[in-house]
Length: 389
Image (tube, rainbow, N blue to C red; front, side, top):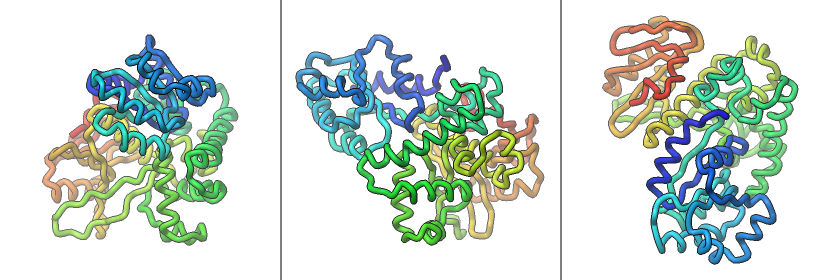
């Protein structure tokens, strides 16, 4: 069984809050994490009719009989649970009483914000990281191409993995999103996802996407809100600071899981990636997701941005925690040339940073002068990220 890095944050939250919510995309391992970390807890799965009816029949009475060590999967399927939990918690705010799991859903967000604000700690669980998979065979090539969803690592052929990814995307678009109350056209949403696969890593232009889809740009923005809420995409915001420069205001768009990205782009075998024109952008997104997801587990207050001037200077990633910042450039190849470093050095100068990093696909460690260190991407597999601010 692969140990999840999120277990440490989960334990901390359970020692701090009366309720902890583990959220993330479908099939990312939320229930498995809860079972591994809380083996003696009573468990209900609200996707099972019997469990849902058992809880709903006498909600207040059930919580009174189970005042602690109760885990409830897919909690968003019973919206009245949240005010009932608030009443139960307010009678005794001991930490670690209840664990909830759930995917993104308007009722889940509403229940948390309206009923459990200040009473709940949230753990966002991503699919497997490369660091979590590093002890299994072929993990390097598999994790980049196939992505990190746990069920894929139980399948023994490329054909089965491709079919799993197809079913995953189809289920989210045709079942999960409609079931959450969003009345979006599945075919149009799927077409948008396929378009996003070919602009992955670029600045977001909703007007262009809307023109290609035949809808207004604000409709595209709504679609993107939904896709982001279901953890399918990441809109990485630009970093703004008053430095007298004209800075890009549009976010960068990434499909969060590299396996989903490659599937949407029509890639079906790892060899297909070798000649794909968007190979470099795929690597960049893979590294951004690896860094940001793991950084937020180790330092939950970390925020992520990119930096770009309208004159063309760019740095792929900025991690910020309070007043501390780290600038990071990502390269698929080996050590970068001086030309490759111009954007990073300009960013460091403008933001007053003393150190920056280049994460590359080679094997060399090197000091590049001026506070810039080049690190192989395998350094990111360490238990603690060496690039945190």
